[in-house]
Length: 90
Image 1 (cartoon, rainbow, N blue to C red):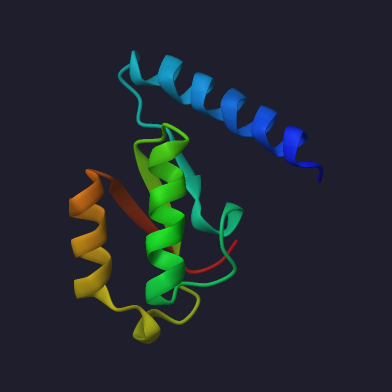
Image 2: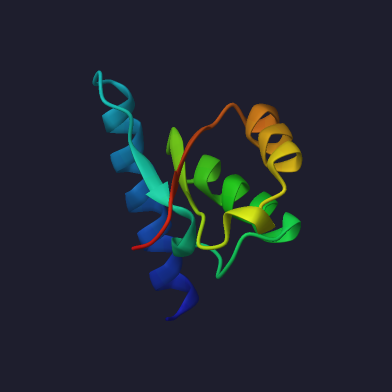
């Protein structure tokens, strides 16, 4: 994907997320949109990108629940004011 295409998509997602904030529904995005797993670095990257895109919630891939650092994940979520849900598969 070309950088300008990626920027256009990000801007459109942010615009749609902003519009959804005005409703009573929470709009979220799956973390695998941004990253390929859920390491500490991927956690921070996915949450940061989710907030930057204007979403209010992130769906965390819990393909291996025991590998998730819940304390770190909770800390990063709180720092960014983001809600979360987990899924065991897509």
